[in-house]
Image 1: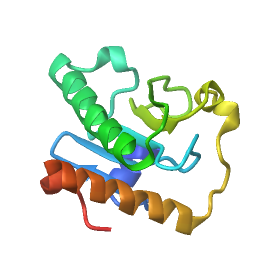
Image 2: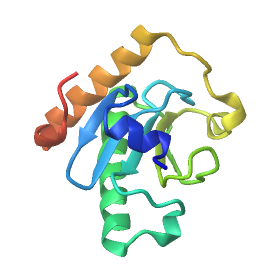
Image 3: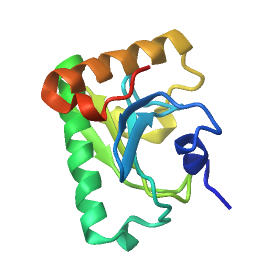
Image 4: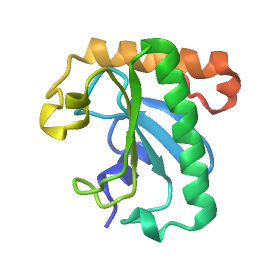
Length: 142
């Protein structure tokens, strides 16, 4: 059975994509910790990150770093957070988000049902920053 992330990757469920390559995608979290909160997800389904092939794990981390740099360029946060926890969806994913406080590292503080325009704005800013950083070939158009 496909995970919700596979359904997003396959276009069965909408997602605000900011990165797509042959091994990974990145799209905005529907329950963000802050504006720009992005999930970096392998196209292959792997439940636990420790089971990823090493080259795929390295690729995901590089994509997460590029996303993190773009988040930093747009939002100028005190930190860019990164976390793998995997409890809500059994498909490895790396959370990457701008954070100004330690409270923004606690998932009890997610923003439920964010305004669609706010999310669209974040996706567009992130796509622009990734393109400006030289990653345009991996940035989907809206």
